[in-house]
Amino acid sequence: GAVVSQHPSWVICKSGTSVKIECRSLDFQATTMFWYRQFPKQSLMLMATSNEGSKATYEQGVEKDKFLINHASLTLSTLTVTSAHPEDSSFYICSAREQQDYEQYFGPGTRLTVT
Amino acid sequence: QKEVEQNSGPLSVPEGAIASLNCTYSDRVSQSFFWYRQYSGKSPELIMSIYSNGDKEDGRFTAQLNKASQYVSLLIRDSQPSDSATYLCAVNTNAGKSTFGDGTTLTVKP
Image 1 (cartoon, one colour):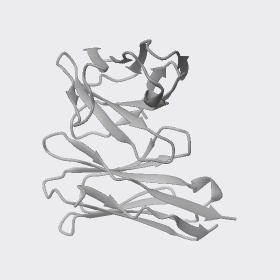
Image 2 (cartoon, chains in turn yellow, red; image 1 turned 30 degrees about the vertical axis):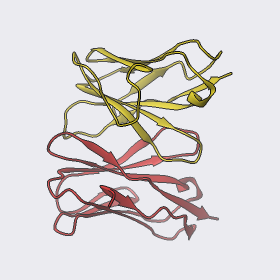
Image 3 (cartoon, chains in turn orange, green; image 1 turned 90 degrees about the vertical axis):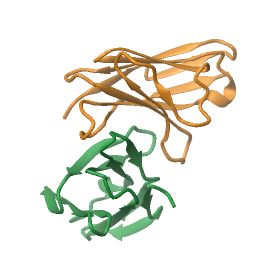
Image 4 (cartoon, helix red, strand yellow; image 1 turned 60 degrees about the vertical axis):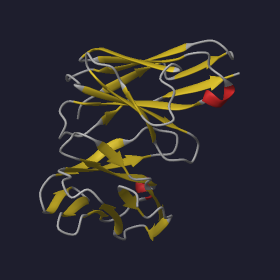
């Protein structure tokens, strides 16, 4: 199957700082990438959908100025959590899809802890 | 009504039994259907995709799709303790939207 990488796999940062998470599709070109957040024992929550070269579409309730998404190429998307607070601590997972009828492939996730 | 609905479980089956996971969806124009497995603390991994009515088998897994009933299921034969996980149903529409169910937690008891 297709491979999606995420970096870093875990990060600890101080409150008020910003953190960037990278998502790469390693062996296919991803026209669409998705960013999810998951709290312990809860469902996946879609944060935003990004298509290469265009602005991300954010789900209701997700602050676009706080969670900056860039999908600069067909193999790379980044999520920047700005001015992080402890309540932003979560498991952030990206996924990538080659075409709209196709399956999504998930990255391994990034565990963010804000102290 | 949720767009994609799954029984939250937990579903518990003995080792060697058949586990049956069900999913219903509301959008009739949905075209693509997927099952993912998520172990605790890990990200989801794709198990099966199905696009046409009927059954699709891959090893111990069989996906079943009935578009008329807006129903997709996953059967796991000869269940193993390593199958214990949360199983997510996902549906793609013509517009490219992907919607996930909340997942069913499966426990296979030795």
